[in-house]
Amino acid sequence: MDHLTPEKRSWNMSRIKSKDTTPECIVRSFLHRNGFWFRPHAKDLPGKPDIVLPKYKTLIEVRGCYWHRHEGCKDSTTPSTNTEFWKKKFATNVSRDKQNEQELKKLGWNVIVIWECEIASAINSLISRIKTVGIKK
Image (cartoon, rainbow, N blue to C red; front, side):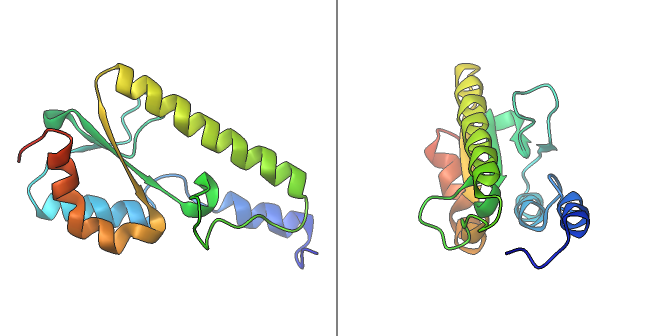
């Protein structure tokens, strides 16, 4: 059972950011320090990708494990109240992610997904992941 009133829960949920999150800012800071030029949240691309590296035709999506359902992650839990609502909400998020990724690939973009729980290890391998998709710095 939820220990918060519906009004308080609604207020809490309204404060959750969808862009400029801490994990996203960590990745952007890393890229900036390493000399990469990027655009955040390109409105002209499907799904408004978190980080766009136009020179390399590469996008980086920094996804939250909870909201985007990182498979096998301890942070990918489902609330015990209003479960059907949340299952539908999460399924919609995952479906939208897949659709946006397919559209971006059709447009010729390379897509790199970094999960929130992987930020520390992902930072260490990010440049090699960018190079793996056919890009050289």
